[in-house]
Image (cartoon, rainbow, N blue to C red; front, side):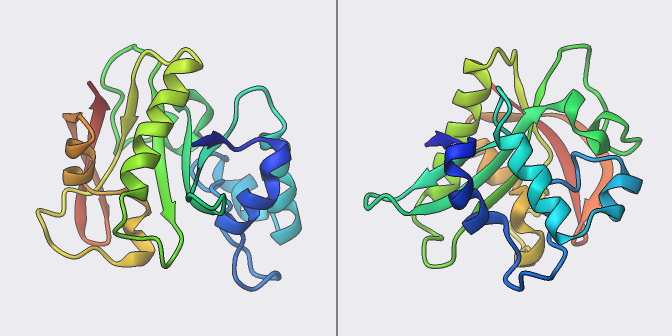
Length: 188
């Protein structure tokens, strides 16, 4: 597991760039930016914004690699205070005054799913956040109760996935994704 730094930007691109270069992909910025700014950025600006984030002292996420050194996963992790959507959400509550970090996005490359990459990403993101001074890491997965989650919405993870990683539910939300309620979970 490695932080997504400027020297690893090609790997960040492998994980986050849309398949069609002219498409406006998320680049893991949608929860980070104020909605007006998020909607105003075109494909090049989104890429450039993520490149700039990778050049900052605190990385915008972590990358997972296979035994051969190929990038196979991404996890977005940052202080909740830097994530506009979560910081200002009326649906996902602030649990307390602790300056929590948020782990909001998990992405595993096709061909590498079902091999423990997501589990490793969660552990790596928590380790990175704690090393940066995070008092606690929280996530907002769906509580799908074993039901299938649409793959386009699976990036938030599931309650069971985070429970297996040692997280516990600390609050319910009024947020849903792909028809499933979301919960606030925190690392133990």
